[in-house]
Length: 217
Image (cartoon, rainbow, N blue to C red; front, top):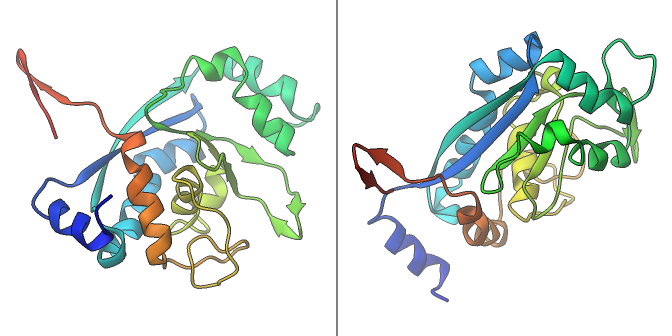
């Protein structure tokens, strides 16, 4: 495998890599709609990886698709796996997170080649003394983020969860994106960047179609 610097030299002669993001949310959820319309998720991911370009090439762009569930399907998917009696069903445990992606309604929205992000509330719970704002499968393609708390940490929460999907684990460094508790920083190490480089193509955007031909990245 070429060295990081060698790969960067090659990359600079190519187009930027493209990361596919699929956002799933409930129709009429104004907080989720605000997150989607403000492009907070993709901008956070793109900005932090690109700001570490010298360590983290390639540069990336993002392409976003959305899957909007009507309130009936959302209720069928969410209510059975969350605490009963809540006005706004919310995730309260790791089991809730895992079960979320087993529901028929959410599965119908998933895109295997994209990072799938469900915008859903998290209950006011803590894990190891840390308030939970999002969760993702490390090395997987599933994530859930609280749209309300995105606005509190807009620069970092989406990128932190994407970092997990790209294979990064928690670290104990307040300046690092993957710091194990809030607040987290925006820095990535060379080793973390190598992991991102090796995993980014798992979320490659599909070729762009132009007329009868295909315009590839």
